[in-house]
Length: 211
Image: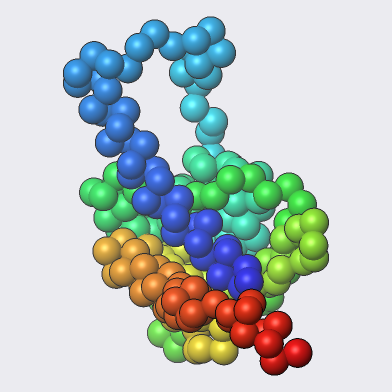
């Protein structure tokens, strides 16, 4: 089942980014990093990609559209630039980032934003579809945005973590809570599989006797 794969990819990237940054720092500290290959040196020397400029007048759904397009393209600089300042600050404290590998085959739809009564926030519903060799997987995601000086920026997302359960909010401004919910969802999904694995296998000899 891949109903939670988008979440897993998105949030697992947080953990993987943190681990790779710590490993890199450790290697640099003990001198065990080794010499970079020619290709690695070229990649390291390349200037960082500039984020796509989004005007401050862009509507919440327009911001989400740019964000999802950047996710699909693997454009990390743009996805990070479209988070709230607090989200960027808190993620940086944990050496994390919201990112996934590029998914060029993915498609998405974005609906018109629903404004909060005080106009300080907005919710934008989207449908993200990924194509796999054995079929498509579709996820409904509600993005939470907050108005900032530079325009609308993403503060979090809500989606179904467990099949048939209500959506849960993943707060980009609270990475610890987001990762906790991810771990709880994975544990809940793994529990039935573990119980099945613990069940005793049928006795082939007994089956032959019954025949």
